[in-house]
Length: 179
Image (cartoon, rainbow, N blue to C red; front, side, top):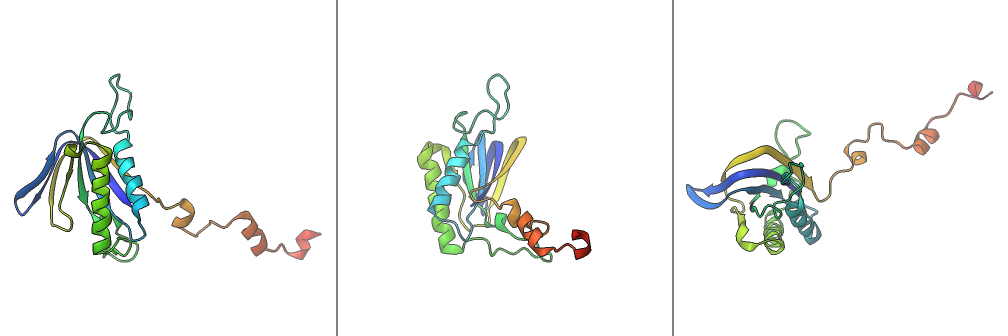
């Protein structure tokens, strides 16, 4: 699961000119469900969203307080496009995103878990699979990307990632250098 968190002074979601949800000070969460995600990732992401330190404390110490600490609000918006792959050509590939029904089920569980772990009336939602207009007043700006299963550096590229053991077995010194 992947999410983009934006610290906001306010945010809202509109669908077909109808206001669906709005929040004041808090965090706007764009969330995407990956094809391999399970309830475990959903629960982990919900906890991360609420615990992420995005605000200063009373003394000005940065990155000290979470949305719960400031008693802020949360607006969750489903956004499968966060999982786009743009490695080939100019057309995004969304094969990494979960399919319709699975994505809806896990996203709904994510939203419910955020409500359960916080205060239900402070957690708002967009409309799954709708064309939404999302308006926000970013505070900072502060924008963070978080993942439940981040790609490890060794998985990003195979170039230059062989281990010492592999490189020793792949390369043989010429016999004249061994003497």
